[in-house]
Length: 106
View 1 (cartoon, rainbow, N blue to C red):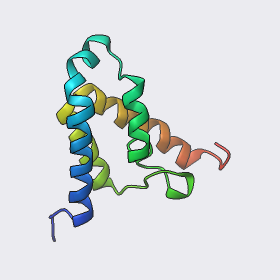
View 2 (view 1 turned 180 degrees about the vertical axis):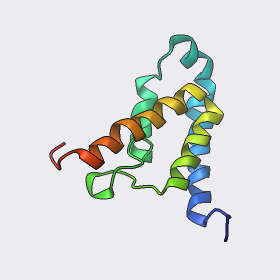
View 3 (view 1 turned 60 degrees about the vertical axis):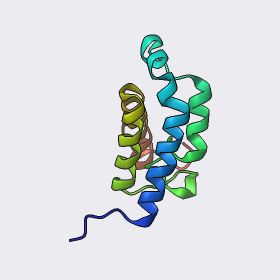
View 4 (view 1 turned 45 degrees about the vertical axis):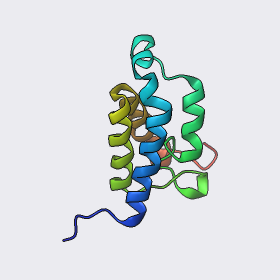
């Protein structure tokens, strides 16, 4: 069994890492003090696919495999643990429930 990341997964890790280094890590103390991720940062997460990791592409999601989603959460946690937890909850408690049990209109 090969446990190496694919080229696509390595590229994804770099994209998320670079985003976190630029947009989240410098604000980590502020995020923790205010207990809020700045809306400007959240808006930048959408186009990267961080807000729809488990959402099928047909609904404008990233439709990531489990390893790629874990890579994203790991990189977010490198920048700020609370942000990683928030985005993970959004994806797996919020989006996943709609994908699994919602209608196409939702």
